[in-house]
Structures are given as C-alpha cells and as structure tokens.
Amino acid sequence: MAHRTRPANRSEQEIAGYRDVLQTIHTHPQNIALTPAVVLQLHRDLFRFVPGGGGPATVNGFASVFSDVDQPNGSGPATKRGNRHASTLIEYYGINGELLYSSFVPASPGDGGFSFFGVVFPDARIARVRITSGDVAPGPTDSEKDDVVMMDDFIFGEPHSIQ
Image (cartoon, rainbow, N blue to C red; front, side, top):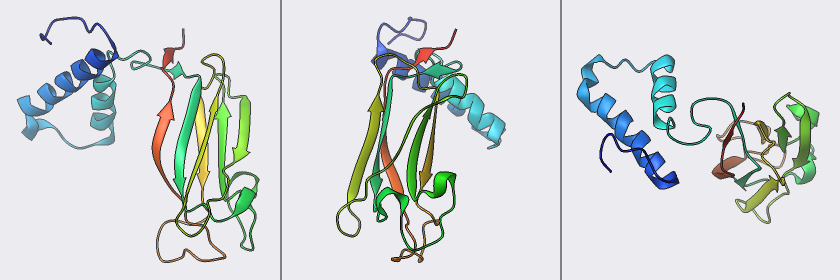
C-alpha cells in the first residue's frame, strides 16, 4: 500500500495505522518518552483510519473468553468485592451511561477451564463495557474461597463513530 493511498477496506485501514505508528517510532526513537500521553497518542494514530478510531464509538456486540471462573453466578464462601458482589460480572453501557445489560459469567468446569460470554444487539449501541473479573488479583491466592479469573480474546463488532 503506497504511503499516500487512502485505505480501501478494513485490512488496509489497520495496515495504514501500523505503518504510520512504526514510522513515528523508527524516525526518532531516542526522542520518544514512554509516558501515558505518548502511548495514548500512538494508540490514536494506530486506529486513525479505522472506523471509530479517532474518537468515541459504539459497537453492536462484545464478548470475551474467561479462564478459571470458579464461583457460579458470583456466589461463594468468600467476601466479594466489586459491583453486586460478583466474582465475574460483565456489564454493557450505552452512550449516555445507561446500563443496557449485565450478567454473571458462567463458571467453567474443573480447575482452569474456560468460559465464554458475549452479547450482540441488532444495532451498534454498546459504548462501554465494565468487567469485574474474579475477586482477587492473580497470584498464590487461588483457592476455594478466592476466585482468580483471567481474560483473553476480546471480540467486538465493527466500531461506529458517535456523531
């Protein structure tokens, strides 16, 4: 893809963003301080060509794979922290902050099994997702009383810019 060519599809949009960010990084790497502001700017540049990449956007669906959800429906013997005392809860919000849907992530069978949870709406109305993941941080505390949960493979619909 030529440098000044306008991306024709999603794949080219992603490539154009990577191209521009890599050019920035490789041009003067010694002058780039790794600060939150710089990381945010590189992120904006990376998604500049992708719909919804330059500002707020909504999607029609969002899902994730969870590992080792032990407590069904957030219940269990330990004291829970987080929204509604859940071990693992996923909440979907609209552009005005209204709660669209929330649900506990189902427990996985056995120790270290996988759970999947996601929601799809007929239109792009999800502006924010909040995930309460387990009730303790990863470490040596995974026990019958504590639920350490990890996440991977976030899946979401095509972003639509908020006008």
